[in-house]
Length: 311
Image 1 (cartoon, helix red, strand yellow):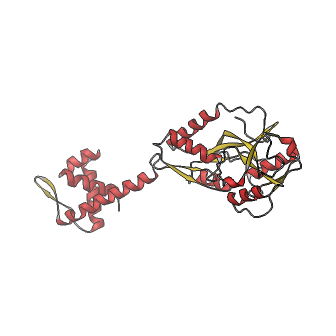
Image 2 (cartoon, rainbow, N blue to C red):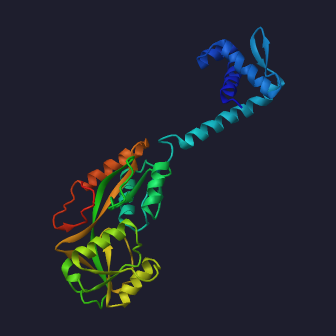
Image 3 (tube, rainbow, N blue to C red):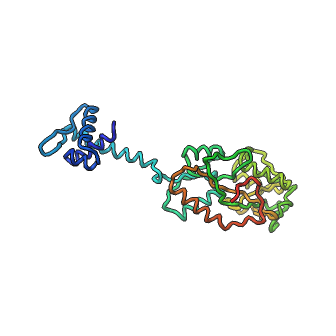
């Protein structure tokens, strides 16, 4: 059914004259007559009767009018559901406890008027595909991994350098240290079962191992953060890296220690990705908010791979 013809019918019914309907719709009176005639042919009924006072609804026209109004309202709701700025800003944060989630919580506190949808996509290829299709508006990732450049239509800017800390149980040899030089970690077993080969964070840790001669083990199934914390607490021979902005809670009895790593401090580079032609108005607000937070970050005394995008 032609929605313009339905809209013309409703306006004409409210106006009572085709001439007034034409003026309101900014078309000719002939155009109004043609639209009404086409609608009547499609429905197989007469909708109006011409009288000296104008155009009056027939019984069929009266029956059709409330449904015509419903059709127009439904069409407006359908358009509004996808109209830029009318839907929430959709952002991929990878996981619920990481640094990206903290950044988005800060953005929400600063801009409570902006509606958000937070999603969690594991692989960067899925995130990039979602950006290009419009399924999401932005994603937090570490880019660009060697040999896997971003598509030309995807923009990226570095927004947070997250320092890594060493997480140990109470019986670990380094548990009592106020800080530990990165080179001193050589020979210690660092267990990270969540590191999946081929991901951007796997490449990051491979470069860290190659640079400083560390031993990072990704063996065994990944049962989640709770199981990781239990194992680290109970195993003096194991430690793990934990992002300084990662929010984890563990029982008091675990006795876990977060030890700063220095000389240099390895930092994990988080970048915001978005599609170059994304028109969502809240995306600009998010970028400005993150840029303001990144402006004061000091990278002296830190290490990151040479493939990380510059500020």
